[in-house]
Length: 559
Figure (cartoon, one colour):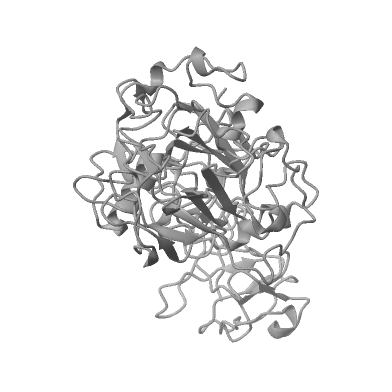
């Protein structure tokens, strides 16, 4: 066999990857698979047997008689190259080389599974150096952060210019997500285009504005006798918007009730009979107990959006103060119902509570099941808007502006007979269960429509300082600031009357939970013709907002 070694330098070779004496490649996983481990080892990358460095093993085989002979004891290696018969390969000694100098082969890909050969991602290559050893791998491309709007799929997911969604909120930074990774903001999954903008010093909706007002959703809303569509319009006018608004319903304060009443055409005296309530709040072309409107009267403006949600125990734009007859014109809206059982059961003696500012008992959380064995109280001209909401993941509380007006002011303030109309705002939430040690637990009776002293929203708020829209002539408790806002409301027709002015009602919630809010206003008491359907009251709802952090629940003066 002829061998080529010129001046001690091995010429470029093309050799089999794993040389055994019969020149057959042997697959392997361990060195032991290759036979004599002093000569051979297993290349773990290619899973082929190779000759160990330093071993002089003749790789060619043909007719010169030297095939397969170890040549370490041959002193003369500088012989002329002589082809091995018909083989195109030159006859050369394999002097312990790992590879044929100048040859290349692909390296194993080290990027994430499924990304090789996607976009620019690819495996690298290595080249055999002149000394017969492999170079390091080069040219590998692994996934990188997506560069937006350049037409390249840097993250090798098969889509160009999409970016990553590390927080799993469905938005990538290429699609406008301004907080996609922990550390960029407290709750990355709650920050993305279209998120609710809570008041927290963060640009939650990624519009380059911080804590701005959210878009209103009450453009063009209307109401009618159709209570289903009207409920949704009222909810949107109050500021409840999708996707957080799940549903809205409009009805009475509880199951409809039967009243013993005289309602014969306005006669001062007439026989009484049992009258079953209408199933829904009254609404026709003349008398409407609910409305959406940009203004209330000629002065009072909306707080947010295009409209205010208005609920009333009588005609919303023409309240009555006629206790002599039971007619529509006198405020009899022909409706009656029980009150919410989960609220009245926590009131002393199963009756609407008297305000502490008027001598009533302070709220007592130990009062429970007070209606056991008793019929639930029946109230007159009730109307209740119920909204079911999904709490945004970045919200821990909410607030809504409320504005209560009544013709009862100042006549029945702290009256011994409990005629007073009521507004309640009941919250169903898991907040108290999830946060039992919080210093801001929601009211045990669910009613947020009361001040920090437990005074419920009504005319009995006057001694507590929350009934402020009234004239100086009726400033019996020293808190009236004037009655200009009554202009055009109908509450300016009786030489008195008054309103609270804008209040803020707020409560606490658990991020991501579903809650229910019920807003109801109703009358109570008895007059000569039967249950009291006159001396009307109205509640306005507007400017609902989610808040980031828990707050003091209840109702107070708008800051």
